[in-house]
Image (tube, rainbow, N blue to C red):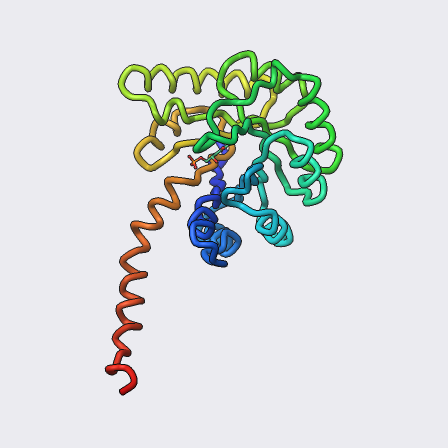
Length: 246
Ligand code: PXP
């Protein structure tokens, strides 16, 4: 019997809209409350080195809300580790980060920097933070994730979600094999990146999954579902017009 697949919502792109105008809305923390009230089980915030969307204050504000499990996504740098040790979110997902990228591109090279990751994982674990490593489904990072003592891996679904035709089938088979391998190693299996309603059925073929972390497609869909209501609201407010001051 499998347990219920959990949904973690990434609210980064709520902050993207806010940062585009330098306003104090929309608030990713208020969005997190809405997501939790609608069936999400946790909230992800990616505090990027360049602070392009989520800000330090967002992480602090969300972490102060004890009823919302926070998965802090971050690069494994000294600066970010320091912030995570101060904030102590329920979970930290370590990701590779490049300044120029539009979004997280590949998986972490855990095998190439095992000692370094072992130290970061240990420091966070000792502070009571559950550490997840964002990796591809290949054997080397899975083996390295086990070696460095991370209890959780998040499998990168981006290549599957972006692929078409036969490549897509091959990517899915590889994800399925990777999830089995991770489970046999005793790792909790999460997955994320690029998931939307169209590619979700394939993702649901992956065994042993605990949590799916989904962001961009949910915010994009929210715009389309929410715009009619937002326009109706504005239209109704404008109907208060009585010709202005004479
Ligand atoms: N998981 C990780 C580790 C990510 O880097 C991202 C993107 O920030 C996501 C999940 C969510 O991806 P998307 O926004 O494409 O749903």
